[in-house]
Amino acid sequence: MDTALPPERFGTLLRDSRRARKLSQLDLAGQAEVSQRHLSFLESGRARPSREMVLQLATALDLPLRERNRLLLGAGFAGIYPERRLEERDMAPATEALRMLIAHHEPFPAIVVDRAWNQLLANAAVPRIFGALGDWDTMWQRVCGDGPRNVLMMTLHEHGLRPYWANLEEFAPPLLARTAHEALSHPPTQAVLDTVLRYPGLPRKLRRIDLDAARLPVLPARIQAGPLQLSLYSMLTTFGTPLDVTTDELRVESFFPADAQTEALLRRLGAPPAQSQAAPPP
Image (tube, rainbow, N blue to C red; front, side):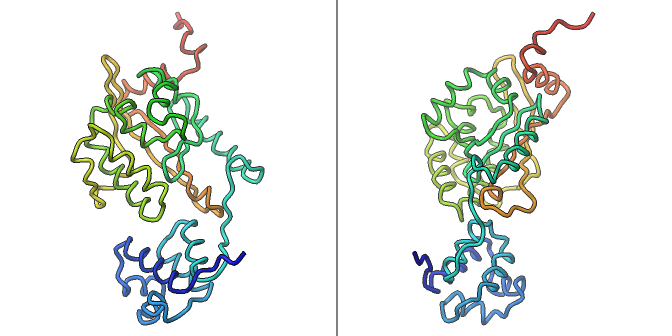
């Protein structure tokens, strides 16, 4: 079946991608090493790009692999980056590497999510630690029902983790800004973001997303539930040289203790049951 789209479609996609990154035609032309006039012709549909030109512009725009495929299709070429589910045989090495990575992070929690914040994998420490706030499976059911377990929804839902954040208005703005940037070129992420922003009781300040909010290398988060207090920071990591749409969209979120008291508590809560119940040495 012919999935090629007319060159005007390519021009629209190119222009939208450029504007989403707040680049002028002159900026992009310089980065892609093409003339501004030729770039203008490509965006207006007066010129049709070669396959190499599409990839050159996609690289200059630093587009995710899914969007590079879209640009190729828009210009009349087949996409070159496959998309495989983690369960497929070809993805077994990547899946095993991810499982080993997050297991090695124990007794601290670590998860694997996609671009829309759907949780794909979690290490054993996650339910042990966050389960201290309540029955973890019940919380997921209240937040996501029978749908995918979505971390952004769990983070900001009134029946999820939102009541337990002591610094919600500190870490949520950069988190939402990052999500909004992802949503510019990924409709599933936009759908999740729209759902979260409609949550009742969400502070009005958080509903007005500042796309220029500080992009911190790590996000500080403090949990308080009665006597339980945790001071954490989380860090997102990605594959450095992905050749598949799925691996390109994977993110590993690792949680770390921000102080000695939290580290001791995380080690106790995140330890396997036999270890956590063992008597202290004499």
